[in-house]
Length: 449
Ligand code: HEM
Image 1 (cartoon, rainbow, N blue to C red):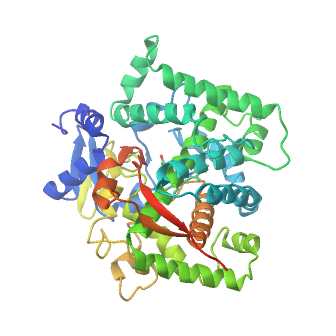
Image 2: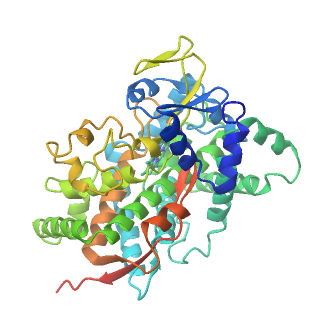
Image 3: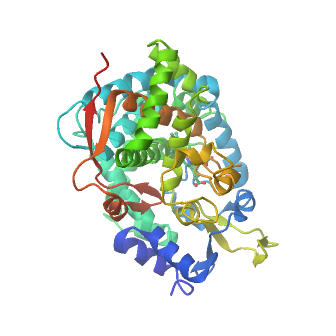
């Protein structure tokens, strides 16, 4: 049915929000090139990587209502202009300015995690990352962590709107039709209004430290292609792109640390050594971990990469269009105008590209002789590369390094009863970004005397 209508994808997505598992099954059955729409291919072959990074964005990006933010902008020139503005918010210097806020917020996270009994770590990381993105985007905390989500109305509405993205991403024209009907899409409209209000409110303050909107607002009046509607969409992008992705990666990392005590011990030994090397100067240590990691942290880097690989947080990956002349990938010709995507979930779990792909093995990233397939690293593209790659990658890495190191220094981690890999996969939802279900952990404070 997939070859005749895109409604197949929409129906599969709507039935369980696990489109990525369906696509993986199709790859098992039919091979590397699978038709998932009348004019759309999912491709599970690492040879596509270098090629697809140069292609234009596909019709999926027509989802941007009322106007596209940078990520949803299909026109290459307009995207380039907008992207340059975002880049200014993620230079090495800019990212270091976000560090004090990350240290304060992560300390808050650590103290709130000092509780008896199981904690739903997915929720904690979501609250933490939302607050963090509030800080670096608008110099404003959303207060999710301290209120344990009592303010999470907009987080819930975002989630609801992401259900729409999961379904209507397959049939983007429908979102425009539904948008014309009064009361349809009302939650999404409320969320967009909230994003626009964030911008209006941010304009009325001049914060002491620069944030993403210092860069975006400075460009607002200078014919850079971001009008008032665009600013609301950029606010939406800032809130969603940074928070859900990083939170899901942290949740993956801590699930696998909780389920693998040997890996956890190796990581903790390395982190303890790091703390000794810095003689307790945590701030300096965190500064050195940003943005490229310190020497002697290969295990930490391996753990983070495994967290990004083992369950890709963009499981279906971004959609692109083959250029008019078409493409040849590993001997197979793809006609011009075909929508193409890499099924990242399938590719990062393919034994042709990663040894024992379903196992969490941090060593694979720094023992090339033992793990030659992983060492090629071609199939590992969590942040994408090229023109449309993730602008927030340095900030995401900073968060992943600091939160992982600080948490593993503070707590022994174990899975709570009922939390296991089968449940992890059953509860996860592909809504373009991966949403993890409830992951319950037992955190035991370490005695640091
Ligand atoms: C583990 C964390 C993250 C992952 C795996 C990730 C991954 C990605 C990917 C694959 C894209 C390309 C999407 C597309 O082409 O449609 C992207 C775009 C983007 N990401 Fe991230 N991201 C992460 C964290 C962040 C953070 C912390 C920010 C901070 C604001 C951020 C901001 C953005 C923005 C603004 C774009 C659009 C870039 C453009 O179109 O030029 N991301 N991200």
